[in-house]
Length: 201
Image (cartoon, rainbow, N blue to C red):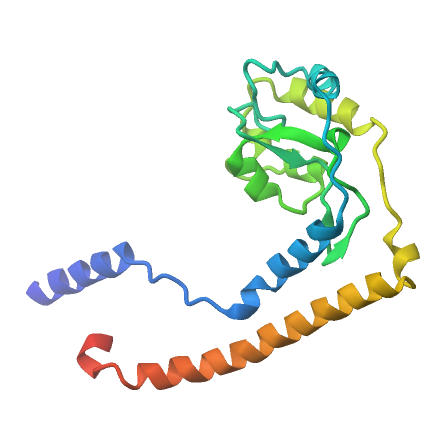
């Protein structure tokens, strides 16, 4: 009986613990690629009139900024159409017609996902689960998505020397990150060997 209680207790303790994942340098490759894209994508600052027009289409008040996706309080603006997809620039830029008010949770969760797929995702804490006003928000987003927006054909720039050199530098950075990860894995193993065994248990 005592052994069973001890085992149950150990199970509960182990269930309560979650080891933080070890990080890898190569986990940042997507972030680095996104940074390279975002660094060259044009940014067009909107006027107050343009911002008001965007909010009017979305049915959102400037005095009470809410997330265009879920309806919660918004504290930032998100690209409706992502700037990066499959590690390549989509052609969309940072302009008012490609930006919508967003809460931090939706912005982080959406990332490069198509906005309509994101909004209609059935998962927990996705916009569709916030039923209050969902149909109204979806209709507003569909209307907003029909607005004209700028799009650059980056494929036409592939022959440009500066553009080609830029992505050559990107490949060099990615190669360096992968090499650094090989070294990091080796160092982690060596460092672990210096830790007393009792502390590793």
